[in-house]
Amino acid sequence: MDQFLITGGTPIKGEVNISGAKNAALPLLAAMILAESPTTLNNVPTLQDVRTLIKLIEGLGIVIEKQGDTVTCNTKTINSYFAPYDLVKTMRASILVLGPLLARFGEAEVSLPGGCAIGSRPVDQHLKAFEAMGASIVVENGYVKAKAPEGGRLIGCNHTFDMVTVGGTENVLIAATLVKGTMVLENCAKEPEVVDLANMLVAMGAKISGIGTSTMTIEGVESLHGCEYSVVPDRIETGSYLAGALMSAAVFGEGDVTCHRTDEKLLSPVIKKFKEMGANVTTGEDWIRVQMQGRPKAVDIRTTPHPGFPTDMQAQLMAACCLAEGTSTIIENIFENRFMHVPELRRLGAKIKVDGHTAIVKGVEGFKAAPVMATDLRASMSLVMAAAVAEAGGKTLLDRIYHIDRGYEDVENKLRGLGVVIERVKSK
Ligand code: EPZ
Image 1 (cartoon, rainbow, N blue to C red):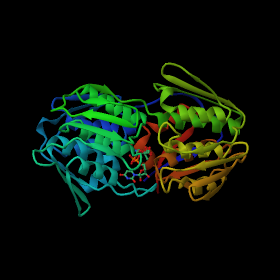
Image 2 (tube, rainbow, N blue to C red; image 1 turned 90 degrees about the vertical axis):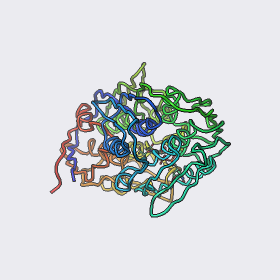
Image 3 (tube, rainbow, N blue to C red; image 1 turned 180 degrees about the horizontal axis):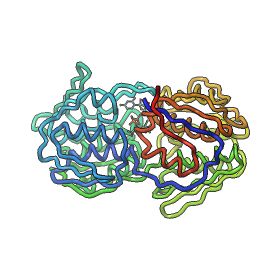
Image 4 (cartoon, rainbow, N blue to C red; image 1 turned 135 degrees about the horizontal axis):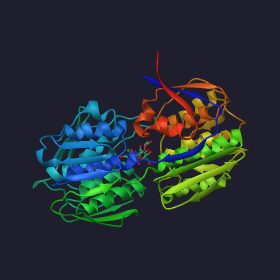
């Protein structure tokens, strides 16, 4: 397994181009299964998770190809509705192929995604909605076997999710585009990636109103055609690099990061926190710059569904709070186990107490290099940034960086562009 060797001591300053959002690209790729004619998707990031989903879609007999950041897809030759465990277990979002297969072909057999480090990650909300749409769902031997009602089409209905679920909203929204009649979906997720998916479905001929709100009404259509579409910029990648400027300022007195090819409207709750911590944030058409002098101020953070503070930025902001002046409180409301970065940050010298879903972070002057381990995608980035601002010459070996390769495109070069001294080494 690869590791990162990061040498501390250099301020985080520079510019970085942001890639397409992983969490938009995945549902958009799944939605391509609906199209009866070819589809082209641009600004698709080169990530392990994208490769896995493309491989799974290929396994359905679909012709799908990625050249650079463009994916083309032609579903004419589809000959299977089966998504195997060995692929789904490596990438939970594969469950998103269930909706399009069931809606367009009336059947699907998709492995139940396993849990992951941050939680059990059930998909009961997805299945409950499909049953409300008339599907018969049998879960056996770790697979979801789904069949549309007689006649092969799902039936529109009024359905309310029991809790806000991004993947559930996406899976059901995709399926609802082809229902008989009309679907009213309540308590929907409003994340920018859900909006991006709805916009592409409309470009394919879907009839959706209430996009970006918690209630979406979908008038079923007979079929959907292909389109050319571009993935929304990655707001979490953007926030992850910008957080480095605050951490650098805490240790070196200054930090200055500009992200290009992004959109400040996607991460306003994160920008609000940066400003609360004392950062100077300037924005333009497609860029955001965070400049910071001196230690950030401590803040209180609670993660909630959009438009609240995103859970995917919790670990990165915790790392910044570790160096803040004062004591911060961080409450994780979305996942049951998303504090695995805490023991690793402690190894670097952080002072954090955890009580259930609440972390109390007492600011310290700086981090000391030490070998640490990535536990999940976003935690790994918080550790990279912490190691980058550790004491001058301090070398941190970060293990299990396959987590980071899942969700941060070209991560070493982007970090080097911000002054981070990092190299990828093969573990012994
Ligand atoms: C998406 O996961 C993202 N992944 C996650 O990003 C993100 O953290 C999460 O949304 C919340 O914003 C992708 O988009 C690929 P949920 P998802 O369904 O859809 C519970 C990253 O780092 N729940 O909104 O799986 C669930 O257990 C990843 O990029 C049910 O109980 O999240 C969780 O506690 C991590 N039953 C909460 O809801 C269900 O049927 C939110 O989950 C579905 C969800």
